[in-house]
Image (tube, helix red, strand yellow):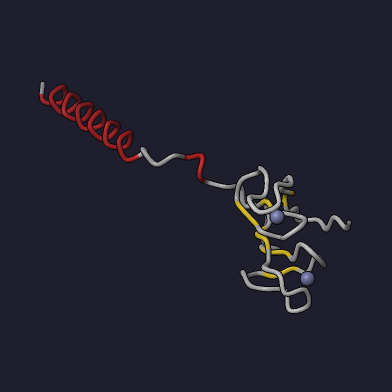
Length: 102
Ligand SMILES: [Zn+2]
Ligand SMILES: [Zn+2]
């Protein structure tokens, strides 16, 4: 009889733990990005120079674009989502890990 009581309390505990795990899981899992770009994190949209941290290309004086983000081919403004440049109205290009020379 004692074992049954333990089993019941255990199952109640696991239900409680499960409910707790469910509530703590409220953080959207979509935010997790696949860690594909490891070495190259930022790139110059003009010359394709790579950097592991954000900054400015010393040659072209433009801000590095984060790999996976979108940038304007005209003014090199960058943003995280695709769309049109708010300055020029041209389509934003995705910054790929591989250099696409244009
Ligand atoms: Zn550059
Ligand atoms: Zn632009």
